[in-house]
Image 1 (tube, rainbow, N blue to C red):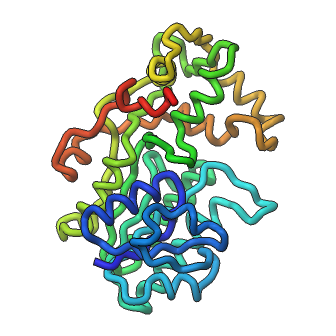
Image 2: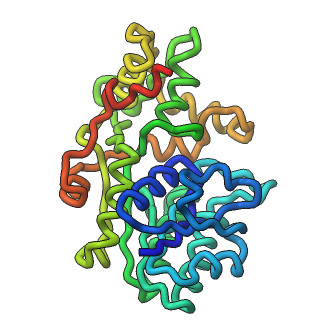
Length: 306
């Protein structure tokens, strides 16, 4: 199948390109000017130069395709550079849906996120509205809502690498955020490997029963923030790393004044979503890919030792 891919140059996009090629598909990747080197196996893909704000570039990417995959997403806005949740996570998807209907590309796979909702943070709300747009489009849609995704970043950025760099590598103690109390911590996640999520996409392409479904994808364990830090520390060769408990409310207070700075590690909205939790069972993912999801362990985090 010829697959139009929107969001193929980032961390997850690289795994998605790998999975599509391994399954015998031909990815057609929309690539911003100057970013062609970011596409994995570029010689085996068809590259279309342009951006998600260009209707002509979207049409060129979709032309002659059997399906489209939309996985564009950001974790932090930069409005001064036109990088906003609305522009990339919602408006771009609306353009792709309109173009797909016009060009007769009926199959659409959408990357969303666990915990999205109508009246949430701007990140959550734009992801939710993108889901609504896709599901009401009349196209054959499958939506994926993964928990936090990990895996070798291969020159990009992912959350375990970022936590290792910001909290484990420095000589200061790491910050063990908690909500409620340190013993009854509600800050939990189900880290899921990028390769497993990418395989879920490719499996869905060939299975009509996935049309109209929303899949919540989690890894095999629910881990607290501190538990995640401890596993990252072991993988990075620092098993004795000190972790100091900190109520997330204190960090939110600091973020109120400082989260506009590019180097500040988290925003208020990110802390809000952290407190809400990001846990998901692995059953749907296991069934879709036909194997157990990979765990978040020092072995699967081996790339951090580099």
